[in-house]
Length: 295
Picture 1: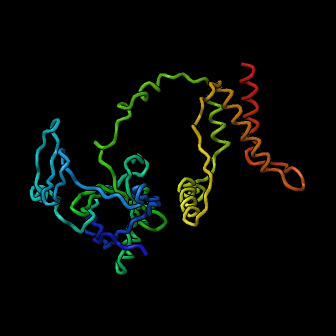
Picture 2 (picture 1 turned 180 degrees about the vertical axis):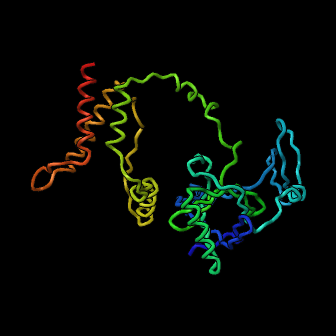
Picture 3 (picture 1 turned 60 degrees about the vertical axis):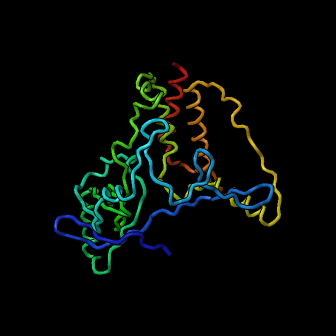
């Protein structure tokens, strides 16, 4: 059963709502230990200095490298003096439009659960935020660290996401190869065909449709090996070199494949249906294909 990792209250204006914090995500990672292949015993790591001598834990201090092999030593007491003041409040400072927050700022997600006596004020806050389409921006302290957070109403509940600060987001202009993208010319036919392909693959998001197939295969392999089974694993060297194709031709082929998939879905055992979802899109695709061929 999930356990609360923090308890306090949401504070906005003169109103406070007692809440508990629960993690909204449970990571499903396959973890391995390092094993000595000769003795089949677990490998342990030791803390050693540059000379290779093991260093006792009580001799280890924190150092910040200011130049190569030159460090400023900072004590735990000095860091503790700078730690944010412990608080049990999630202090809301602003309400902003949700669409104004770039998803890149979101980090870890948590559920905020109200105390039994605070359910009405909690529901009131959630409903008011949902009606306004706004998200609360707040700060709070957990484990001596101050966090910037966004609180969002979701299906009658409040979900809190920790956020990265603006100076932690990498500017796209600093990434090689991104700044030149604005100079690329696209033809009207290419853009129209790409839009049609997007429409042909459009659907509602359903998180259950997507599975971590690699993790499932790793767990299956572990289970088989634990039971004594041996299975050959096919390996791949990756792509041997993708062929250079015409962009418009590739788009046309992709749209054609999407059309064929829709046709298969529209056929019934008793015969072909008289109307298929997206038939108007098909007509537009055919017109674009004719236009592209004549271009």
